[in-house]
Length: 125
Image 1 (cartoon, rainbow, N blue to C red):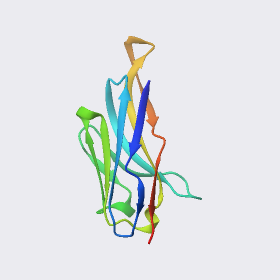
Image 2: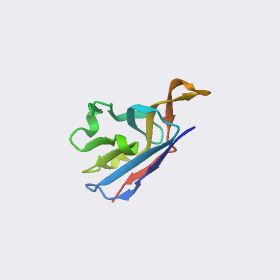
Image 3: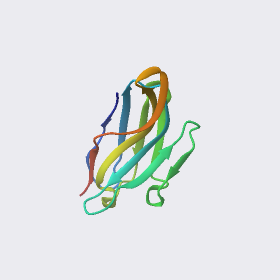
Image 4: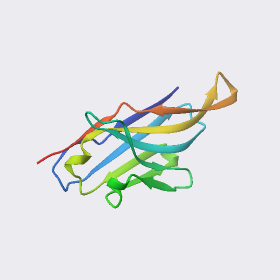
C-alpha cells in the first residue's frame, strides 16, 4: 500500500556532489523515521543517515561533514545531499521509512518498514 521511489543517483567525479530524493506515496497516516542506507559490492548494507520527525539526525562517521539528510513532511520526501564525494562512497543507496498505515480497515493502524529499490551512486575519475 506504500511505495518509495528514489531518484538522483549517477556517476560523478571525486569531489563532486549529488542529491538523492525519495518520495513515499500510498496510504500514509504518518512517517516516523526516514533513513538512507547503502550497500557496496562485497559489503553488508550500512546505515548512512537517519532523521526523525523532530528533525534530529545521525550519520555514520565516514560521511559526517559531507552528507546532509533532510525531509519535507508535507511532501513525504527525504533527501540526501552529498558533497565532496569519494570513491569509497560508491554503492547502491536505499531509502527506508517507518510508516504508519491502515491495517485491513481504516479503524486500525500499524507501523511498517518500507524500502525503495535503490539508486546507484558511482564516484570515479
